[in-house]
Length: 309
Image (cartoon, rainbow, N blue to C red; front, side, top):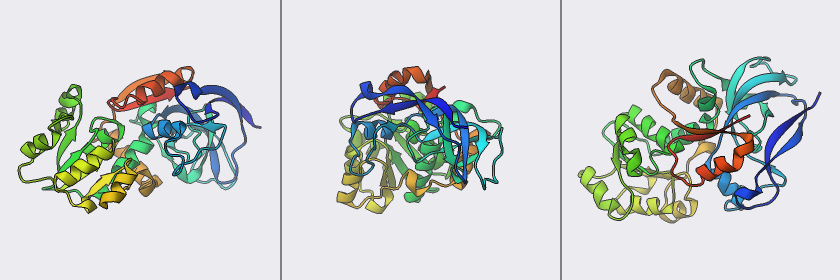
């Protein structure tokens, strides 16, 4: 029997004020899908950009639109043909339908993995976008021992996972971040550097033998900086500045390049084991979704902002 549930919605492109919480009908899960009672759903800057209409050509919205990809929760119903999960299983994963920020959501079986016991709901519900995006970016620049890699917005959601995956591969990592985040970056083995005027010279001082690769998680100015530092275009990856990447021949590998349950399970196990830490900056109830996105859109959050039903 179809359920009614609260869900985040917006009816047209625009700012924070377009967001509201509505009661919606959640149909029974179709064949090959399960219904999840959501315990946590992470927020991402890309979702805000889609709502503003900035990505209309690449990721157009249909209205009324839901919000969110990341989710973690408990399976409450299974559709025909589902063999990997049963009612009561704790899972994390994603939806491609912009609807994870809701109390209940139907999700394809192959978009979910089992939640490791050591993973909190807040971290599990925030892991998909940042985890697979960071995985794809690190793989794209082929970083390894002996490489020096610069990462922009290194303390943000994607950046914080990216720098740790790079360190796990043996790379030396220089993380661009505000000075408030420098102690945390230092604590995980990353060399911090402040953004702003003179950044290129500061990086050259920290990397006298040159920079081998560059991962941008913030914007076009950092693609330009990577070229200025002499990084080969095939070792520059940006997850956001698509036009800038096209101009210089850089890569744009992000979440879509690594959105598999196998990758997500690998990242989840790394976090559950403590090999990677995903900071949770704040949690908000659904009723405060506007406050939550206000924090996300400041673009200075360490780690993740999470909605909880």
